[in-house]
Image (cartoon, rainbow, N blue to C red):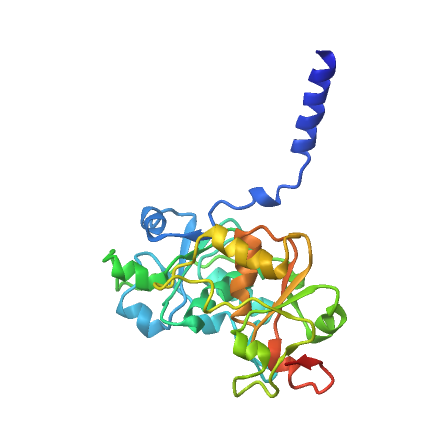
Length: 298
């Protein structure tokens, strides 16, 4: 009996000594309209409407603040969807009334794949800036209005909060890092199969094909239901593990054409499915294809 008590005590101490990463979240990574409606007046919750200001003024979720997508990602160095300078990003965060302990819910329109990727690109950028409690409104503003929930035309002027943090630079990687990771990390091309195979390409991507040894885990045709909400967790896990593998500790690098759509799977892999080491190649195919020495496969 004494040995059993000692064993239980040792087990308890081990549990207490485990890292608290999984306990850092105070909100699920994806929340529904009912959760948002219930928490509209919660002082810890900041609802960030990332639509253009004219759309926001025409009607928005009550108490939502407006920080349009262009505040979070921009054209820089000839590449789309690049990170703002850290100080500029901190100004956007503080200007939206967000502090390190805020629960941030990202809302926007849900008309197409580009709109849907805006949500997760902003979420990933907030993670980069040190914010832990980030959620995405499932189905976005479209679902909110489809359910005839309350709207407001009153522009919310949040109380600005000085924000400073150490960015998590490891969440975004550059071309040299990816080059050295071929054959080591799981490099995941999240574009649709024709783009992965090199049958199609966007105009701003100079060469077709995928990064050498990359696997394909499409986003637009796989992740969403017809109304733009996410498929259930089990279905998403089955898709992810079949392509990226079941080892949640393996390094994964996602990319797309410009670094925006890659954020969808990156966010789901880490915040919903529990993968531990996921990075976005921010330059993605746009930057990679410009370099004739960067290997592409078709």
